[in-house]
Structures are given as structure tokens and as C-alpha cells.
Amino acid sequence: MTLDVSAVVKEYIWKMLSDCSGGMKAFILDDFTINIVSVVFSQTELLQAEVFLVERLQHIPVKKLQHFKAVCFVRPTMKNCEKLCEHLKRHIYGEYFLCELHSTTRCTTN
Image (cartoon, rainbow, N blue to C red; front, side):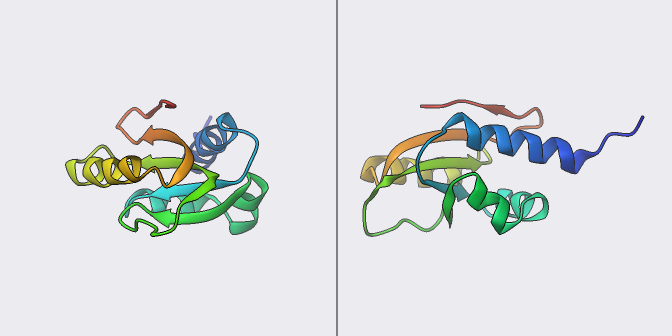
């Protein structure tokens, strides 16, 4: 029996996006996780999961997007935590779902 890592990663991300069901989502990714997502998901599949905006964590929108739910999938680095805090202080999106990438990945929602 072989393990298809791409399928496992795709299933995990799909579950992450499904856990915050209903409504338009903004997928916030860092420089590392954006590469993971781009390998396992097509743009069409992201749209099927109601992801209408994919943003890099480093980019902080000027305009508030309260009608979007932000699903943040980032590594737990100091730089990412600082940027995430900036996002949260400005309350750009209506809701935030925070997911971190560890050697053993775990997702929490806030």
C-alpha cells in the first residue's frame, strides 16, 4: 500500500476550507503554504470551496472586506505571527479561521 501525500494534503486543506462553511472566503497564505496549495488545488477547485480571494499574508488590504471569511493557513514563524496580528488588529475580514502548518499539522478556529 502506498501513501499519496498529495491526496492527504488536499483532503486536509479541503477539510480546513469546509470547516468554515457558508459564505465567501479569502484564503490567506504565506510564501511557503501558497506553494503547497498551488500544487494540490486548481483555481476551479478553490472556487468550488467558495474561495474567491487568495492573498499573501504579507499583503494587508487597505479596504475592509467584512463580507469575506479569512482562512489563514500559515507557518508559525515570528514574522507570520506579526503579520497575522496586523490583520487581526485592523479587522479587515468578517471572521478569521487560523490554521498553522507544523510537522504534525493541526487546525484551530477562532
